Length: 330
Length: 265
Ligand SMILES: Nc1ncnc2c1ncn2[C@@H]1O[C@H](COP(=O)(O)OP(=O)(O)O)[C@@H](O)[C@H]1O
Ligand SMILES: [Mg+2]
Image (cartoon, rainbow over all chains, first blue to last red; front, side, top):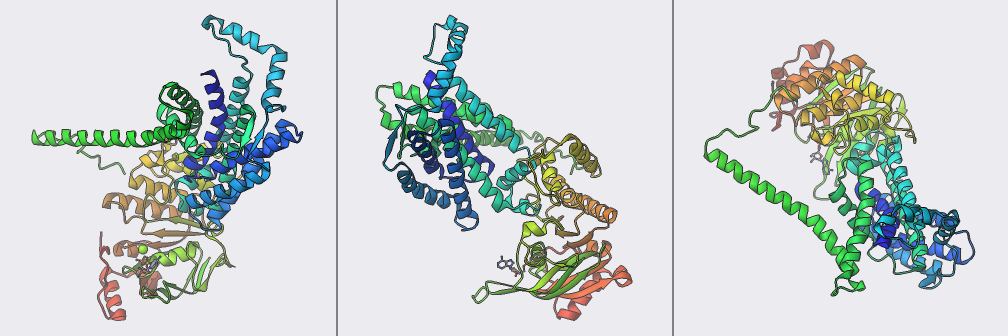
């Protein structure tokens, strides 16, 4: 459970990237499956070759940005539809990721990573003991708090950055592009550029998350990105359903929460005797399907009941509430 | 201010669906001109507006604004000079964003977008003041999502967004057509007030002939991709709906055909 929260926080960075493309830009960007691995591969290969893991993670972020920019250019300049642009990029990245790694799997177990470095520093500061004393009444003590706390800080920094960006002049234009694109052009904003930039940023976050997951899990694998977009969507949808999405700041909280809840659901599901690790993708797909279908069904049901009530009211000859309109309002 | 030189536009050229939408339009608007445009369905009015704004590019001809040839400028680049309101109330605003965010987007029409805050305290105050001029109470709903507004409120907001940054050219394409009569009248009144206040150079398409006669200092009538009738000054002031219809019949030899045309309000 504890490790589910850790993983949830790392994957939350990816989910925030998906939120940016899927919700803000209204662009279902499948590049994610590829760019996640690109981030993991770039970081892994650099680390194996002796680079500082923080620098390697930053490099992964830039590589993801480049991948997103290319998808954006395919769509805006190449006039390829959003889904296909993402799929093309995803497939191209599969080969590129293999090239980056030179093989299909790069282990990081003996390496200095962001995770080992932070854990070491954390141990030195003796923070675990203090935190464990705080929660001692629960009788629970994880091996270290370092990952949880540091990844929470990363996720919150990304959230803060997104919240701020989406409030700036550029950010407002970015959001409007996903909301009503033709209108944005009539207010002097270059929607092509905004989409390219937005997808770049989105995939930069996805790649950063991939780099952290690789360091957390101890390896980078060419197949680790399969279905990543669906995991991102699951996090966004679960989060919005549980925590609401009234404003951007609220929605980004929700996405982080959703990413954690998703990991918890998965961990619980895997405790069921009958299910195996290989069923994870099926479970994820089912979660997303349910999250998409259930609200619609509920809304339709409500609507039917409302209509029935109305018919009954009319039959009884009552005046229908709301029929009196205020003609002064415009 | 605005100059159109021999603009032509053909849709689906060389196919069975070929449609000549504009046949050599010449039109010059002086600063402060308020030109109303009427015409039958498919006359090419919307196509003309789209060519001026850069959403469509003409097959031949040039668009000049402020003595500058803008024909090659993309829509977003040209929008620095142009304010627009569309017929569809959904078209001019971002529904999932708040009133103040929509205004902030419009505020940057003439300014480079930066990474500074879109809605500052100062801007918010200014937005409030500007909204007050609409007398719709929107100044108290700055944080409301625009999707919650009625069609009339949205259209009034679109009008404000298009004009409060004083565009060199204002394009209105049947911007009251989707509203019920009372709300249409209110938006028309606001249009008149705003255009007069800022002395905006305006091109306004309307299906309401009476309105076309009542508003503005010039009137043009389009049909089959051409301007077939124009009146200004005293001649325009003396126009009546009957005289307009007569003029159409004399020139075209047929009845004015428009399913939406309103002869009087
Ligand atoms: N995108 C398009 N493709 C093909 N034909 C079009 C297109 N837009 C407009 N047209 C045609 O061009 C003519 C002029 O249309 P439009 O400018 O919308 O007329 P108006 O606004 O005066 O009613 C019409 O015959 C219309 O069918
Ligand atoms: Mg039209």
